[in-house]
Image (cartoon, rainbow over all chains, first blue to last red; front, side):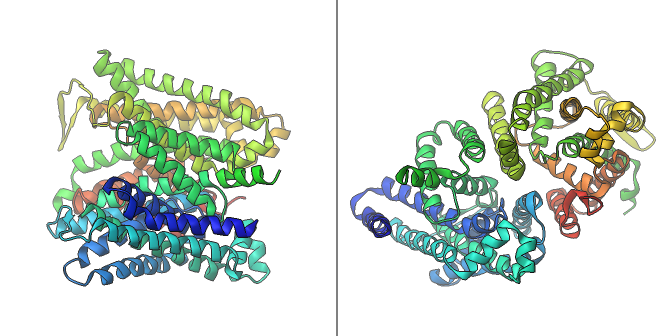
Length: 299
Length: 294
């Protein structure tokens, strides 16, 4: 049973790897979008799915990564900007993590949202002071290269989520989610574990942001730090369900297809459906798509 | 720097601060009585603004007709929402537990739905009300008629709510409920009815605040969230269930924001508001209760 599931995932990864050879630009673009959301949502569950500290500001890591990339572009080699983006996002999480992760429950949710907004406006003001209003990226790599970068990031994010969940770290994080005070009293180093999870869950979104800045060959803070990014991540993770790797993949697949149908013509309708879906899943199917499927398979 | 001491700025600070206090009052009431943190509260403000816009600019009504209308509409909405959804949920403990555990996600969902529904109906571009705006000058303060009226109404409503909460039977019952729900139920306070009214009044006041904003500022479907944030700051600073504290904290926030922006530049407004919010959060990580009760 487990072997069959594993082969299925390997098959899926291979199919995704073959996609640029088969499809045109539209399909590759769609593939990048799907992989981007998978990478973001998988990173998100490392913190929020496993500890219950729901981050509503993951756009901040995405935006920071994009910003680092456009600032480095043409000044440093491309790989430096790419790795720098991940490093900057991870270090930022480490820097703010200690005070921020002391705030619990609903307040953590709004706090992360507020942090993303604060960084957004700080960067808007910095850019305005520098006399820049949006930056263009010239000479971005071809679409297929970006696709493989994103495939690498998505695979890495899935593997991290899968491994963490089955590690000592994952056990500690689950203990924090169930009862943080009890975990602390039992000797779980809660502050350190939360910090590690926060940094882990920030680094890949930074690199995803860097790749997406090259993909759109454009950087604009209002877009890169848009709360819509954060909300989409949360929605995918909630709809997919659970704290394990398959959930976000299902959630991302479902919402990317839905948005492909609706976003171009009816963006408002897409957002309304998104809101309804989140409410519906939270209230009536908290186990998400993944949990539902598992229940179907094991009657 | 003498311009910083002008009455004009003080007036603007009072206007903003009063609105913050008003919005925070509704949030305070709902959070205090139901223990639900309504992040969609700013969207109720936005709905109130659009109700007033519809009544005034699209139907040609007078402000004195539009303001109570917005309050009434949103109050009825709150009442219906409580009666329809929450009473249903409260009767099913498993569902209620899920709502309480995920209230933030749920209300974020509501807020996204409201924003996009309004932008579907009225379009996403900002609108402005056509108000008859004679300018009024008083000492070194210059203001428009509608703005002066908005400030006067804000303070009148704040004051009467404070008095009602302090002296009336219902006000005392609500404060008892905020202090200790179970004890309040034991001494015979009708929780359900008070919760319904708290919802309705909280929404009505938010709707009124939105209508007041629409008198002198542009409105858009996405205008609500800054008010939610301001209201959080006000409640954390002023104390849960403490309306006098809310008023003081609202004014303080209005003063800090207005004078802060005047001393720097308009670009800094958002940084200032979010910065204060984050600072308050980090200094009081226990959240709204501030550790004074559990």
